Amino acid sequence: MSKACFLSEISCNIAVLFIKNNRMKNIQNMLFACAVLLLSAPVKSSGRPCTGCDDVMRGRTFKMLVLTERGGQHGGFTDAGLKWLAEKSVEMNFELTEINNTQRIDEDFLKQYQLVVQLDYPPYNWTETAQKAFTRYVDEGWGGWIGFHHATLLGEFDGFTMWKWYSEFMGGIRFKNYIAPLASGFIRVELPEHPVMKGLKTGFTIPDDEFYTFDKSPRPNVRVLANVDESSYQPDSDVRMGDHPAVWTNPSKKARNVYFLMGHSEKLYDSNDFKTMFANAIRWASGQLDTPDENDYPADYAGNRPRFKALVYYSEQVEEAHRDFARQGVEFFRRLNYGNGFILEIATDFSPYTDEKLKEFDVVVMLNAMPSAREQRQTFERYMENGGGWMGFHAAAYNDRDTKWPWLVDFLGGGVFYCNNWPPQPVKLTVDNPYHDVTKNLPESFIAPESEWYQWQPSPRKNPNVEVLLSLSPDNYPLGIKDIVRFGDFPVVWTNKKYRMIYLNMGHGDDEFTDATQKLLFVNAFRWVVGANGKGNPFEKQEK
Image 1: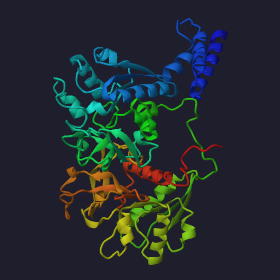
Image 2: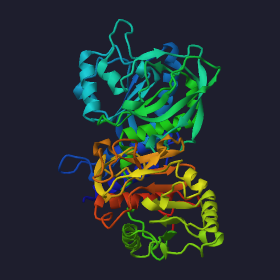
Image 3: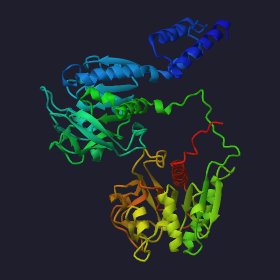
């Protein structure tokens, strides 16, 4: 490398440090960094600027196209949005282009942009060329998309017919009504683990909005991230639709996309919750969340510092198939502890675990049984009620009329054992929530090894505190040869959000640890329960 190029790369790194450390607080700093970059880029023999500068700047900048509706009743929101985006462009390192109509949009034009934001621009008055290009952009995943409020004004407006593809993109809906005098409304987060919802409270209030209603809920065709509580409207309004999604994404499209029902008033930019969602959406839809900082070291070695403490409990006083699973389960968790990444304790007797002893453990894994003695049950109840972690398999949650443990029934979401197939057999499982940490790296569906599958009555899914992560696909029905399950909702993996817990229906026989996808599910579930510890996530990188 030439001396000039070497100095150029040093200067480039200085400028990048300015950007990374958010020191561009004023125009003078911005101009300084730009000058450094321009003056430090001598041309090499290839005719290109120094590789370091070129690579760094190319890797850290993306282009955003913003379609705006200027003036009118949404003008305040649009103007405030553009101001906020201009401020965020330095921090998030994007270039913004604003257009007020679709005349310039064709395929070549859209391919320049990693993200398209419809800042209240409506879904009509698009040129035919723009419609075709945008359809391909979303269907084929050329980039990401964020839409606000007026972007779902779907119907016949201003002499234009409804754009059918766009309606289907939004969940097959048609605009119906709105709250003309405006109202505040309480937004309830449904999927806090989704990247767009990260860092938000469980709910927050949105001021002065119209809260569009539609001819039907888009929920069956989209993934809802948040909804609006219609009973919270201030002032009250009879413009309601029952199930009222407020933020959603359509996972059937290759482009990452998210729609926000709100977007009428500039007051939204006084809400930290709204701004957090918007910033999260930009990072997620543009793919920036998938780009780690290459200057950081990728590995985090625990060394001689075990990250947490786990208790694995099982019983030998159960049927043979459940003993087989437990013995293989013990070996599975021992393998997870190669290198002593955590402290692992194995037990077949729960009686020694007093309140003081049990609270030492970050997670209790129950492979094939729950404690049966009254005192032991009460100890476990207190452990869970005070933030303990639990991962249970199959028979560890078995309960019927003879169990006589009401707390356990509530803990599991209200379901009692109802029936099962026989003999054990493989089944097709489907992922209910692909964004959850337990399922995010699993296929949409997979064939699980043979097991005896328990069905519960009522279905835990009916409990609003329960989040079902995987279910047995109806494609399996009729399920069984001797004992046949023919229909019904069939959750397989779920969590009761009142507790730090996860239940996995599988756990019968010696075939459960033969499938890589299922073992990945077990690892994910274990990590998730441990990582949700209120004392801190032991998997987060620790400063030494």
